[in-house]
Amino acid sequence: MQEILNHFGESMKRADTRFYAVEHISAMFIAIALSHIGRILARKATSTAAKRMRLLVTFGLATILIIVGMPWPGRPGGRDLFRL
Image (cartoon, rainbow, N blue to C red; front, top):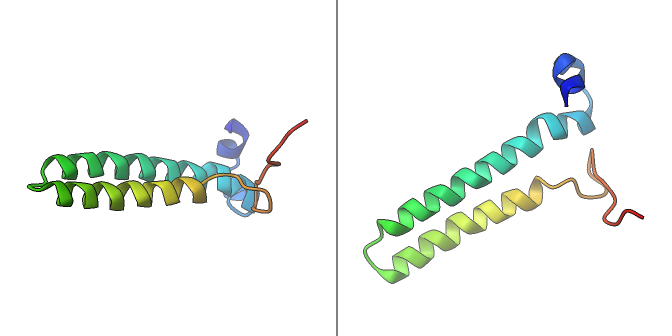
């Protein structure tokens, strides 16, 4: 990670280092923020249905962001699913 930060301009030109320096970190932080916002909005809901809908939407979006931000095989910076 330190090497990426030392040569940030060059790292942004490579898809695999850009994934770990920007995309992975950003997706995970935004997912955490969405989960937190969802809990706050759910507490302020007046009905149980509204509470469930707010939690469903925000936690669903957070889950999608977490899945997108993972280093899946075939993506730049991707890793094998199983390491032996």
